[in-house]
Image 1 (cartoon, rainbow, N blue to C red):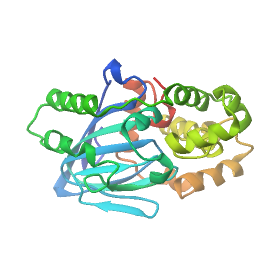
Image 2: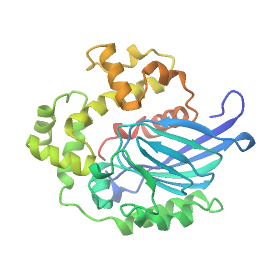
Image 3: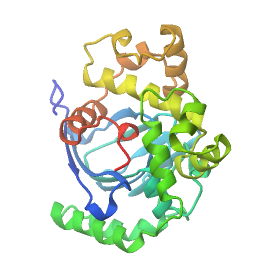
Length: 292
């Protein structure tokens, strides 16, 4: 994607992890950003699962809620219900998104402890184990296949089984079902008590069952709008919202602005990323991915 004035160019590629990692990751994804005249672009990422990102070239300035990081070549985030605002110049970036099962297998920390957090991955105890990937992924002289192979090798060496894997899969499958709208339905579909569901969601998903269902409803709406920006918000709005006012309140909570304010902003990275992701991966956003 190139903007109409030729100020930047964005290319996105999505790579399927090997079958041995089924259900662990959203994708392994690569983004190339070229910005004219040593400039920068800024955008707001939508709520998503936990991620680690590695940058060759420009390094980002990023903020989620009250947490902020600048100049890190390896950034990490926990699951989020807030937008990630970032500013970035010309760069090559590799990203790895952790689904809840991946969090269970790779991150030795409760997801709720790191929700709505962005940090320097080299300096954070929960993420520093991935720091060896800096050498291959931040070296733009290496070809893409060698970098992908380095990710696979690192993840293979770091993956640990979890006793909760089957329960995580059931919860994830129930959570993304549009017909599941109440915590009681969520627990029944997950074959868990409400209390057990609450504990497991906070441990591996980052948030309470009620908030996760609200995030799903919101993300279905936002993804629909991003894939058809010519549509109005009423057309994009999930059927489970009571009315426009209800949707606007939820939008402000999850994105920190109104739908109208969001639509008026440029989305140089996200617009290209969402479209390419939906076309190549079948899902426009991490939170809408199936559990394997």
